[in-house]
Image (cartoon, rainbow over all chains, first blue to last red; front, side):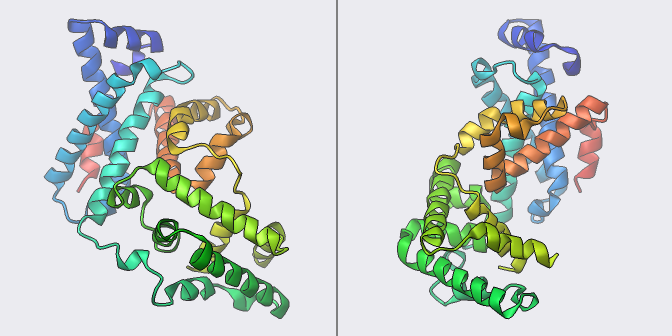
Length: 220
Length: 90
């Protein structure tokens, strides 16, 4: 049984040959299939367009892909966690990317990446400012204005499109990466650069974002 | 963007660091982070860069939360069988 192996036994069995390796690979595949099904079962809304059999087949495909990924990365396992914990993350990673892809299949992102219709201002204005004092509301309005300026003037086109899709329209990172033919690291870097610009600009204008955040906490 | 999301995003901006680890680095370290938590240690204090990335990256955070839950179920002997999980798919 998969759960009774020590880390060393997992590695030895997976690296050996013959019946011991076959058994270990079968156990590992089952373990990965469980991680995929576990993620799918908690995110069923992503598969509205698929029949049950299709979802189950997708889970089998993900488990197979994850098995190959684990076998290719065995030398990366440092033993600083249970082997099963380390292996699960490959199944979860592939399950998540697959689920997001299914959810957004056929959905155009053009509208969700653009701020040409003034939607950026609308997004930034729509909040619970009525709960603040006039002074606090004025402060928040100034901040929103700086943020709008930075987004419209200081960010590159690609940074702006990614930011609008992900932050304002909640398009998942993996789907943005897939549509832009890039990867998670590149998208994260774009968002990180955008956040740094926004933070620096707010600080340069004398805004203490920590104090501003405290306003929201006080409202609760 | 409603007030909560604006606040959450403002917090992300406020907590931005000059140097942040990538999603690949977070993926590499995630199992250790979860293992530290499972053993009752302060994973966030021991691995602050992972914690920081998880606070900023929704995709990595989703994976981390699922991994943490699987680790917990396995530890408690409550890991569902494949049949049970397949029954949840409908």
